[in-house]
Amino acid sequence: MLRVTAKTGARSPRHIVWDWNGTLLDDNDAVVGAVNAVCTAFEREPVDIEQWRAVFSRPLQQCYERLLRRSLSADDWARLDRLYHDHYRELLHTSRLAPGVPDALHEWSGTGGTQSLLSMWFHEELLPLVREFELDPLFTRVDGLRAEVGGGTKDSHLRAHLDALGLDPREVVLLGDVVDDARAAEQVGTDCVLLTTGVMSRAALEATGFPVRDSIPEALRDLDERLAA
Image (tube, rainbow, N blue to C red; front, side, top):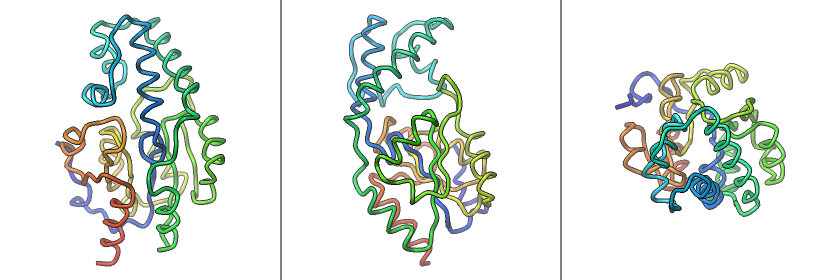
């Protein structure tokens, strides 16, 4: 089980690092559609969101090997990665901001808190999307994945993100929707709150030992109460 960072010296959070996919952006339909394009290409029956949540984990290649019930060569993985992202991009226009966004983020800013965005979605595609939703004025920094292929872990990206902002990890909380967010928070020394709105089951999230909430407004109410205490 992961350690709860708040018990190892974290202070009341003053800065939120937001995850994007499955957290601020409700893209579950696009994700499942893209996963099913992979399933079709690899002759596996389609899945629904609950089935994807049951199998989802990182590293992603191992996740897909369980899903497809076969090992994947380097060529298979390159093909799969391309298939997934091509279909996800085709479906991205169907995605919307999560319930409570952007109002909850404006309310957090109104308390004097700051916030930034750290995503494992490709940086050059993330920036225009954030601008399209008119969220960029809310963030002190926006970082996406600066690599050609996704699937890595988040801790090194979180560390670089906080270094660029000059922030003490003990005054930061990461809000995300997958266990990888919890692992990154633990490795770097930030607090973490996990949301059930994305692609991972509640049971898997609760097993990390970090708080789990069902919506962004609920998570931010908890943070407000901690600041007021």
